[in-house]
Length: 245
Length: 81
Image (cartoon, rainbow over all chains, first blue to last red; front, side, top):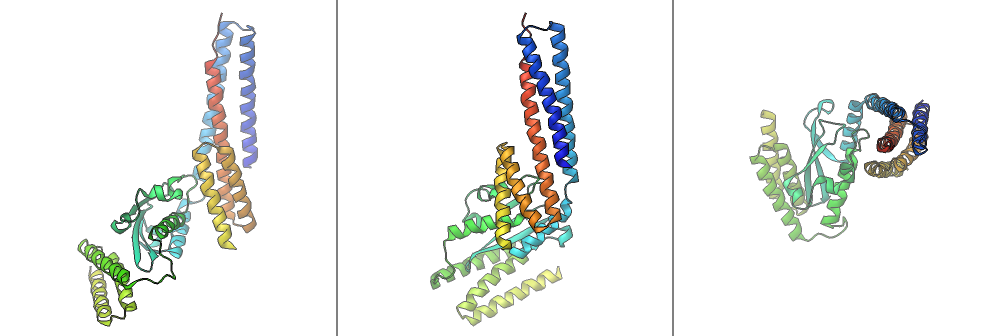
């Protein structure tokens, strides 16, 4: 169906193209009077404008006819959640934003905000403070999927975050099987605690829990049972606060 | 196997979108045709419809570019006594 439509439009174009070249030849050979030339030129110009408008209308109609974007958005959100830890602001069908958590190593965790309420237009991706510390530049500089976003042929959210994750892993440069010195683990825990405090002060309790869970994991590895208990209590306290709000 | 196919599709889409940005419509259309073949083998009807739509739209863009060039040629024609 599409092939035939394109063929018809191309034939129409070539018909006008032949007329233009014919006019060009007649003009060169001085076979036309000025009024004849003016009339032919105007008619051809009108024909080209009509064809252009017809194609433009088809293009717009074609965009409207495209697969249901709402359905495609939900598929994208599920795919993203299957690949990364994500919290959406509302239930899946009504969600407009999400926080994506990426762990570049067992001790380096990052958050990213994605706002997709204008989908299929380009989503807005924001780096949190800890991500900005590692990733220089804009999200578009890191993710080709985001940079080349086309609303008529939207890319996949999961590609964006896989590209960001890959850059983070390159920057952090930590192999999974590499032995991590205790000093690095302690530094990562301190970072998580500071971040949790900041997030709690900002009222971002869910994210504060995530940061504390990262600190908790490190304390468990270090077998510091007193600290494990302390973090668990704090997490429970925050969960309680969320439930009461 | 599926991961390999997904990776191939993703790569094709990214490359095709770059071509569209550079107005290299023919190259983009070829890449989307390759992607269409992949999803046809999978039998994914939604993806097939989506890729067919994209290929059609790129075809329209190609004609629009030719129309604009022809309009320029036409407008440059002037009558000399």
